[in-house]
Amino acid sequence: MTKISVVIPCYNSEKTIKTVVDEIIETVSAKSGYDYEIILVNDCSPDNVYGVITELASENPKIKGLDLARNFGQHSAIMAGFHYITGDIAVCLDDDGQTPACEMFKLIEKLDSYDLVFAEYSEKKHSAFRNFGSKINDAMAQWLIEKPKGLKIMSYFACKRYVIEEVKNYDNPYPYISGLLLRATKRVTNVKINHRERLVGQSGYTIKKLMLLWLNGFTAFSVKPLRIATLAGVITAVLGFIYGIYIVVNKLIHPLTPLGYSSTMAVLLFIGGMIMIILGLIGEYIGRIYISINNAPQYVIRRSVNLEENDNEDRQ
Image 1 (cartoon, rainbow, N blue to C red):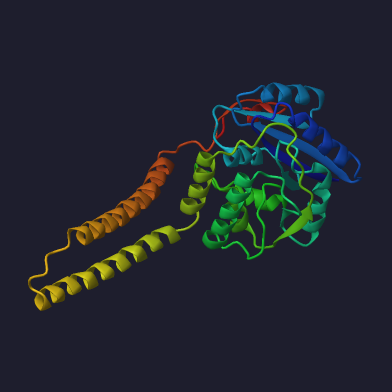
Image 2 (image 1 turned 30 degrees about the vertical axis):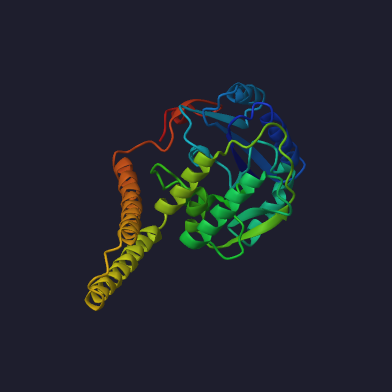
């Protein structure tokens, strides 16, 4: 019997999570040779989603619930769920019903040849803003974490248990799930599935949250931004040196030419801006190192349901 562990981060999904859970149960029950568990992680949602999770768990012991002490973000919530899986295969999907649980076996069947399978949507039903954010995230992943060209990274994926065990070794704050998964294996592919309209409400991703997600990718898995900062500094210094020679030569050839206030200010503002950007980038790296050294929690669990007593303590 192959056991599937489904991990779902929950936020503002009080009205949708039951539909998603029912679809998972129906899908797995219709397939012989498979058992399941569903781990629902409440990322300190402002609605009553944990009350719904508790109700679902009371009716079905295979449904487990985690309640985070504060809003740690989607990726930290997923990491919390990963620490409690007991299945042979892990599946991660969204809580809003847009990722069809009824098609999860399209991903799982590909695990015969691959270790990690991401969904690829034939037509995405996200908003234009969310689609733009996905494109930026995709380009960033390809450049920073050496994502295979053409691979689409989505929040709906299935992978083998050993991949999750490797991902769990990362215990620092600011996890970036895509980077952790691709760091564990390169045997990865896509499977096309349908993408639905959101059942209720709108995406919880704001500009701020997308920026923080991109920043996690930039600083957690690559030093390329620092190398670009160094290159930018070298280029700026060279241009400044060439411009300095030009000013001296021009003064020697035309001694009566007044010094240009506008050009001087433009150069100062450009160089000053470059310096501030580079210092800010370096500061971001140092700040995250400082937070990690001080053992900031990746997540903290306030309470849980349907978990063993020895697992029911705050973990981080």
